[in-house]
Image 1 (tube, rainbow, N blue to C red):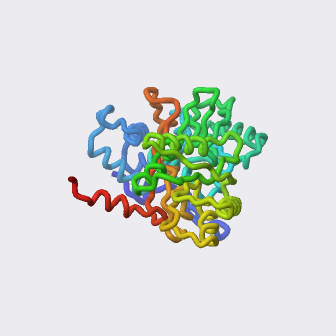
Image 2 (image 1 turned 135 degrees about the horizontal axis):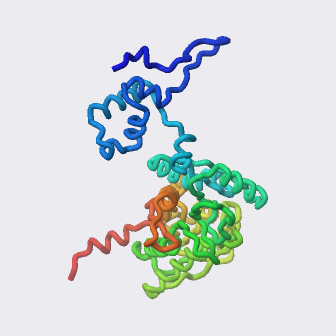
Image 3 (image 1 turned 60 degrees about the horizontal axis):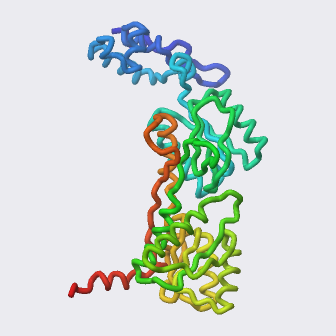
Length: 365
């Protein structure tokens, strides 16, 4: 076997006060291992057994790879395999959103597990910027495209992209485009069931309305809430309309209470609405959960900051991102076009379920 010193890449040295070391090549690995470049290529591409390469030779090559810190040239590999090991991501405001960026976290982890990296472009909602970014991602020959929106909505799928596309947190109502969405209707049913399980069956109101054009989260959550209560012979008393933000929610709930509203339970359509609701209730001298119980949606950090801690139906953003990457790189033609990812209830103290606990503890007669 060739000595390490003789086989190390040439070109190491100091020039103009800057140190540099030439990156090891496949040929360097072959020289150090005492084999041909073809043999190294077969081993690194998982074909050692197919080409009947001995385990001793394979180990020599792997030792040389470690010794030289060899990393395959992705550009050269892409020419051979017709893949670039990159996934294009085109979003509106997702990358800059503290909460929705969890979709990118899930997508990135799944991409790394499949030996890919993300190339991200954000349009900030500008269609002309989106068109430019789409062209750039196509020119980079990414292996597929994730098209992501911050708000769950119906929107047109991008056209003109030459590769595979998966829509994430959005869906095209006019095309059978593969999309990954949170199961908002199931989430609504979970929120309603939380009240029923706590023994709260009457004077339940919903706080919020969906202000974003083509947004579908609010209507689907309301459908789930209504259906679950109806199955129990109950109904919501009404909707306190407001935008999905703290101040509008505070003003709307404040006005509702001053007008004589006496809710027992409030289902807030997101955690920011819940925060404004908390403020209005505190101002009116109403206590959570003893006077009024609250369940919300999002499962954001805000839910854990509120006191009492907020019970919230969490959006599965990381799971959604991971599933979208897997569908992009490992196509599954047997499943539905629209994949719904289940939400989960994160328990806090804004819903007192002690009544339900007492009911379960009662002996059967």
